[in-house]
Amino acid sequence: MNEHQADRKKLLAPDWEQIAQSYDVASDFINLENGYFGIMARPVAEEFKRNIDYLTRYSSYHLRRKFERAGVDQIRTELAARTGVAMEELALTRGATESLQNLICNYRLLKQGDTVMYSNLDYDAMQYAMNDLAQRHGAKVAVVQIPEPVSRQLAIDVYEKALRQHPRTRLLLLTHLNHRTGLVLPVAEIIKLAKSRGVDVIVDVAQSWGQLDYKLPDLGADFVGTNLHKWVGAPLGTGFLYIRKERLADIGVERGDEDHPATDILSRVHSGTVNAAALMTIPAALKLHDEIGVANRGRRLCELRDYWVHQVRDVPNVEILTPDEAGSYGALTSFRVRGHTTFEANNALVDRLMAQYGIFTVARKGPVGGSVIRVTPGLFTRTADLDKLVTAIRELAA
Image: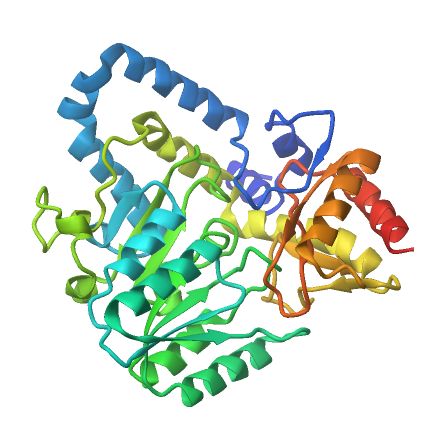
């Protein structure tokens, strides 16, 4: 085997145990709540610490002379290469919430009597922003209810029906991979439907970016927001927004910003003084992410998800919220113990999982059938951890 073949074999088949060992995780519980944010791998965490030390020494001199423009533009250039869009179409933010709030709240084309649309599975803060936008412009709100069970085609049909029922819809929010059940929406197909009706779409890719293998143009969206502290594994407080250059004028300047011209996407974000050491660490996170490979990462996370889901899908009294249909899920999947539909009941089960089994998960509300428990493995998760989860679920459902 020559050197090129050896490198290719490494790329196609990473040593997952070695990768798992590169994460310094607590040993006194099993963390299956990795949808909140991604633990930094050791090389990234060490780079973050070095950046904190460097910034402490060089302070504003480094930020003003080297980082504020050239350093930020270098990060934007690296992100552009990975997203498949132009650097001038990207702006750094503190995360998906800031990215999406800025896109939603500054959307300029909504008129009185129009409709904004989102689903019951979209992120809470984004729902709030859509409600606020509608209220400020005298528009209506339409909420799409995602059925249980659901398939890719059914999801498309549900949105197609909703758009027909609300012909004055002007803005649609879509979540690529939602944080409640883990369902991956066929956003490209839904965006085509929306655009054929003159509907603009803002896409939340907070849970899919870095986990699913795609470029932003694949989605067909003009407006996208995400973070880098989930599946890319950068420090907390990092993210970016995307506006297709031809649509920049349709997103207003953020709170009257005058530091940048209105023709510059940087005028759509005004965060103030940010955690610069976190931003400085983004390249290290991207480098490690590339070394593992997004396709490899996605396959591994799906394997871990399948490992536990396939063992409990047929257990009496257990409902799995995410379909096994290819392309419809990633690492996140939620389950419900039949009869436990309130948020309080699911929080109680979450507490039992931690107290009795040492397994940390989280309850989520919003699905049409009631609240659920979300399970999200990470690259440091072992199948032995998931065996304990399977045992726990069977006993909870008995």
